[in-house]
Length: 80
Image (tube, rainbow, N blue to C red; front, side, top):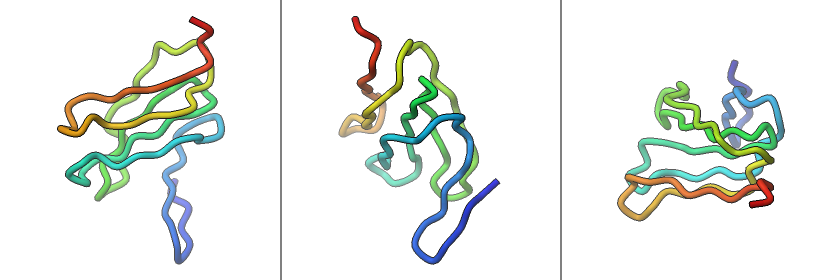
């Protein structure tokens, strides 16, 4: 489901609070990080979920694309 208002559109797909959001360098994708321990990649035009990345054992607090858009980095409460 999409939640819309005049200022933003948010795709509801995480089960926890979304903490970080970033656009890919070319603007075609959006990556989100959440308290639900997941990273999700979205199509910026359609809002469709493209991929869910798992592996963190704690909330994901930050996420970013590399300058070339080929990689994603994230930081979390994994206690590693």
